[in-house]
Image (cartoon, rainbow, N blue to C red):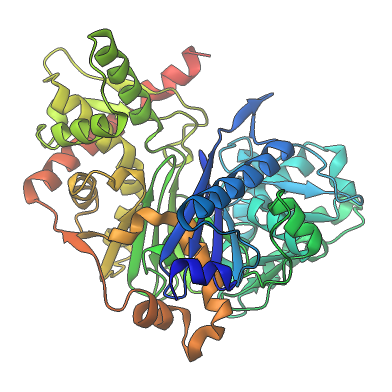
Length: 530
């Protein structure tokens, strides 16, 4: 079928992902290739010290994104989307969305970016003997309990953003196992919430006398390929306000952006990994066995089919680079130069590649928000240099590119050096890798490992969740998810690889030691600049 015939026949599959700064929709054909897309730009808001997106903004963003997709289809193919073969919903992982008897949200959505859960995360980590990150749903829930917030007793359902959208489109309170593992730890053997940890939590909060136990309020955990419900008439109306989309198509289990990133880079089988680098950054390494002990900077989650993954999650990545690019654009305009933003990014990344391997001594802390791995509960973007350091544009930009992935190195050094984890391939995706080769070279230096980038990686998580929907629609074709991705979707394509340059590796190591030594300056900036 042509793309138009696929759409008219109702054979196209839709993937939608809620990112931190953009909601993106991708429509794919029967060969899993993108044929249309739409997007909506948005930003989180800090309201009374809490990073959030309002419910009305969530739905407006979804509907505007779908409308933009519909417009793209009409412009390209002169037809309407009446039926779909399948839909997948993905969103930024973790956070806290608690609902009451009337299905209304009880307090504003708390995103992954919030770091106000330190006491709860520490107590739960000790109770479970398992690292429980600040951003996980169970940390937010227990923090609310510790603060005796009145809404807790009214909770009937607790989910993530992806789970919320899926629920309102299908009526099903389910979650993909990868996203579920960012609520409370999942047992890789059962592919559902760890029974012993659930028991311990229920015993911990029993004196509060709530009318619920944990499993009463959590979504059901589903693995990739399982039935997760169908689009209802109400769901179709909420998604497509033009009224053309008909209900009835299946949806795959909703997943987090980490899981869809693994799918989009074909990194769901053991001994593979990927690094997503955009507004935030995280690496996902699929393990062959459990680690020897818990580590505070390593989050244990799962792939969409339930394999154990060591995740290094950093709250900050490219936002500070974006801010500096905006400054350079303003300077160009001051000189009367009309500089295309994308071209400016490319040129600045390329000049960074010409900088000294150790950035001439410059250091960049890109902390727009707090960075738990380095112990910073709040963020202050900061550039440090001594009078003798080499301040050049190349070193300035290189320091920012290094700074964007510096915290990733902290956790991955533990995996590779202390736990002796073996990886056959690490694939990068996200805005950090948009300029060819440069981002790959920087990450290869940081991790001292070859880094691959695929042509399809730019499609991102919306394409990844569309693939998971296709995996449901095609009834797996008798293959496991890793087999299906290897044999059907990617057909042996592993992308283009860049090996680490020894001089760059040495330079990054010098940079990271300076970075660690000067962290007290970042802490002082947080304390002094309110």
